[in-house]
Amino acid sequence: MKITCFIEYKIDPSKLAQFETYAESWGKIIPECGGDLLGYFLPHEGTNDVAFGLISFNSLADYETYRARLKTDDAGRENFMYAQQERFIVQENRSFLKVVASTYKQLPRAAI
Image 1: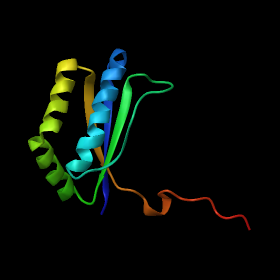
Image 2: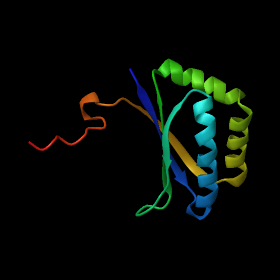
Image 3: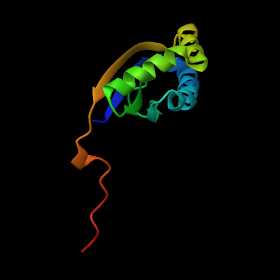
């Protein structure tokens, strides 16, 4: 069963550029460590202190393998250190979701 790790970040809105740099770095690191990166999402309208990251895996076991790889990845460690030094992440929460298959990426019905 495919799962998606949904990461919700509470960020310092005055450090949005630093968070964007952090997210862009994950764009290279996550796929190399085995995650299927769906993307990072920054505030645009409305709430200015919440961002999201979505990463899919074929199973929870694959997620655990990914986390182990991430801990030994030099670029991953550097990115974690960057976040700690710059202090732009105030809080981070993770949820694991599974898709309702009949609703995922539905195309519009062809006109009859």
